[in-house]
Length: 119
Length: 111
Image 1 (cartoon, rainbow over the protein chains, first blue to last red):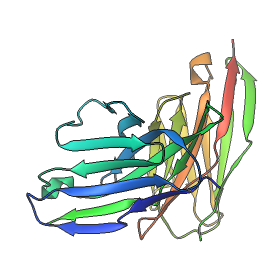
Image 2: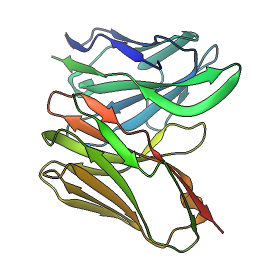
Image 3: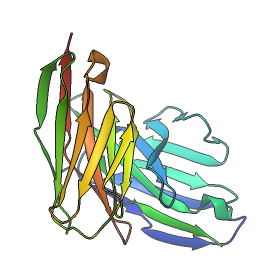
C-alpha cells in the first residue's frame, strides 16, 4: 500500500508553453501533498505544501503565479508550470502523507518524479 | 531496483551526545545521496548532498559520509541539541533520475 504515482514521468516542451504534472495517491487518502524540485547537482528543495481544499503554501522564492498547485481531491494534486522557460527544466517530485480514519500521519510517500525539459 | 534502508528506526539520546545515523543502499551505481530532516507536518528540509564522486560533506555540526562500494552513508551529528529532534531521511538518486527514500530515523534529543 501507500503508492504515489506521477504523470508524466518525462516531458519535453517548448519555451512559453504550460505543463501540468499530476501526483496521485493510488490507495490512500492524502490530506497533504508536497512538491519538490531538484536542479542538476543540487539538493531536492521543497517548493510548496498542498492541503486538500485549500490554497497551497509556497516556500520563499517560489513564484505562486508561475507554479500553480491544485489539490482538488484527497488523491490528486497537480502542479502546472506556466509559461515554462529553459531555467524551469528540472526534476519535480511529489510526496503525500496519508490519513487514517481522520488522523494525519507524518510519513511521506514519494512519487517517482517527473523530469521536465524546456527547449 | 534500488532499495534504501535506514537503521535505527528510532533513536533517543541525551542532549550533548554525538550520534550516527545509518543509511544503506543496494545498488552502488548512484548519482548522488541526500540527507533530509522532516519536522512534524512539514516538508523535507535538505541537510547535505553528496555527489557520487564525493566521500563526505560537512555543514556545521553535521557530517555525512558516503562509501559507494559498501553501499553505505552515515550522518554524524555532533553535540546534539533538543532542536535536532526530527525524522532524518536519506535518499539515493540513480543516474536515470529515479530517487529512492529510506523510511527514516526518528531522533529524539532529551534536554
